[in-house]
Figure 1: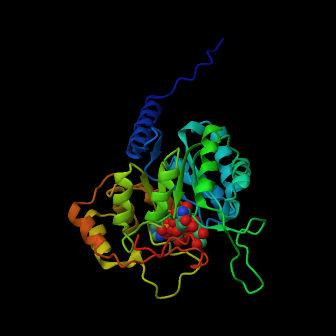
Figure 2: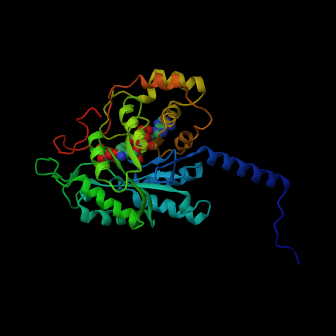
Length: 341
Ligand SMILES: NC(=O)C1=CN([C@@H]2O[C@H](COP(=O)(O)OP(=O)(O)OC[C@H]3O[C@@H](n4cnc5c(N)ncnc54)[C@H](OP(=O)(O)O)[C@@H]3O)[C@@H](O)[C@H]2O)C=CC1
Ligand SMILES: O=C1CO[C@H](CO)[C@@H](O)[C@@H]1O
């Protein structure tokens, strides 16, 4: 009887070994950052805001194939079901397991009332097809009127706010960790005073602070603050969020900045790759968004060069308080961006 053992040709064996080494190198490059609670997070994640439901499934699959093990999601991006489909397909293929992935999602502003928080994470878990999240962030400190409308407005189109205190929301998020629904919790878009107030009340310290960071808004003061408190920082909109819905023709474009272009030329890399390194070399986690396979691959291919201190300073000189993302009514009592930082 013929043996059922498949004997591979030497060239196949070589190719397999070479592929394995390549994969190992790729994984070793996506060096995880250790959070203060002991969990680790891969330094690059795939952003998914504005990734259309019809595109995001393939984008997440492409990202996982390229070596990404970290996906940044949010209920308000309205695409978590499709991301869940991609994760399921990849887990079923067997090359990647749930525990290899770091999945973040965010509590939206209409679910801040303590009795709504657990239901909100459960909807996200159901949509993503997961039993737990790695990280659940309070998306913004401001609460909006509870209900089906994610951006509730009155007859004049004015946002309807809710007076729920983010500290009460945080106390309920702490129970999500105790219940095993998420491993870590954190916040996004807070200012320093809000962070101080949260830290004073917190039983579980935020493991992560997700904020807008790029050369037009380098956030040095908030980053220093987090370093003092051992809170990791994730940089969002690292490429300048050109596809943000409110972008206007003629707005400054980071991808066209001559200073960054010349640094990119020096290393033979793209401007996007330099912008991603700008975050990594400042000790940040970074979540560039793309639905384009070649860019998804490009954005991950940043582990064969490093910026010098001079490069970082030169890029940092583009700082111009150029904030790209704000939310809602500036009169909201918890609107975060009136203070210097
Ligand atoms: N916590 C919060 O409040 C916020 C969190 N975020 C998170 O951060 C993520 C990233 O930020 P985001 O605002 O989306 O913007 P990014 O700065 O990541 O920019 C995304 C844009 O850059 C394009 N792009 C991606 N890669 C390249 C490349 N290599 N060369 C040229 N263009 C490129 C994308 O195009 P294309 O997709 O067509 O390839 C898209 O138009 C979000 O998706 C979200 O997950 C963002 C905002 C707020
Ligand atoms: O993640 C986000 C994308 O942009 C939205 C509109 O400002 C924000 O609400 C949110 O922070």
